[in-house]
Length: 113
Length: 113
Image (tube, rainbow over all chains, first blue to last red; front, side, top):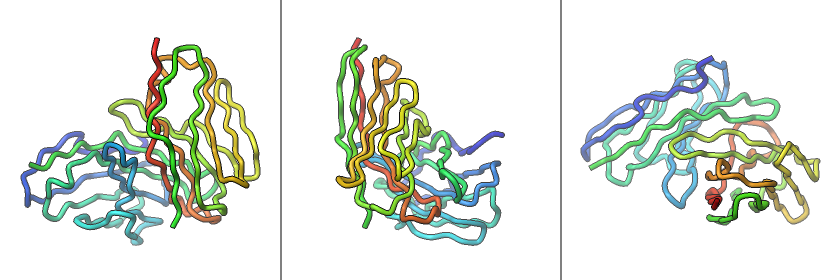
């Protein structure tokens, strides 16, 4: 199993540009989520999904869109990048039963200038 | 809403014990977790405790849970320089296992040789 994969690893955008951060998992996990990590603020949940076709907002959803057309993929779209979206973005997935351990991807470091 | 709080920084000498503390608000959580994040990497599950347990020991790691005070701690015995990382406390949201976790801000552990 590859686990949770994220692309790209690094990205620089100009203000106003749009882009999609990719996330995929091969563990047949129902639950997938996107977090952003900023210094001193821990992990903040952006959007999450409990299964294909179902998404919901987390703590900081503004400026981001998601979709979940398949169990494996959960892309995060930045509609019009702003400097406040400079952050490290992590995708995670888990089963909804049992211990519920979340498996994290390696992260995407995004800079918006 | 649910909240998880941690102190931000802890510094210890190599060979000493480290104790990282966490408080949480959701008394219906089924599991509580400790994740470790090494520099430049995603989070990895270190250990977890079921909410009806008081203590769990796993080699150098001891987790203590005080449900009455909603207090969780992680003790690392014989701390090594390789233990330097950010440690996140997390609880699953509610009593049902949706997969959604609430994370604390993270405690940076610095181990001095």
